[in-house]
Length: 259
Image (tube, rainbow, N blue to C red; front, side, top):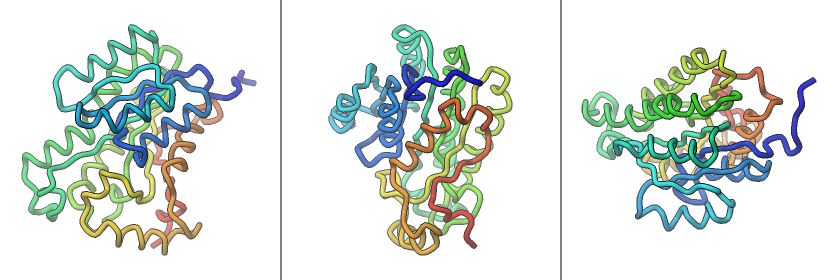
């Protein structure tokens, strides 16, 4: 038998990266963790974004509220230095960051620029690898890492374009990190939510059509929401999921199983 606290995340230290507003997947994760009594560190992208994120961090009782633009040298290191100083450890990491230049995102993959592809890969994928490198030494008793993907990583989704290959690389990175970190008790989960009305998704061409198609295909007959994703991640972070790692976890109402 394993000793599981009640609630099962009580006292766990969770860093959540990627909250833009109350509709963000990252916010759903943070809210679910907090409901299970984890302690939160929340980041915001910029001073422009801060007024939208800070009230949410306060509402959730986040102990740490830190600036983080993964494309700005030194900011990622500063976040983990602060966590080490304040907490001395980390148990949960959520990476919910994706970006590509609009002109590359809204055009076909064949027309994407080398620079745009490289920036999308760095911010949306390699930043997770950099986070994992910094987080792993703080996960002294093991832990859980999450990266947000999408079904377009493994199947062609019209208008997903450049982000399809980028998310495929992110899922592969999760698998390799799960292998490399597994003996340290660290589990790595690529999570693939169904389409959600987030700010990031608004940049996709004909996104409303994608939502309508998902509703038609979903065996459960409806779209998922950010709390569905959050509670799935919360479960995976608990000892109840202690032998689950590396595989893509779909939180999409079953859309991924449909032809």
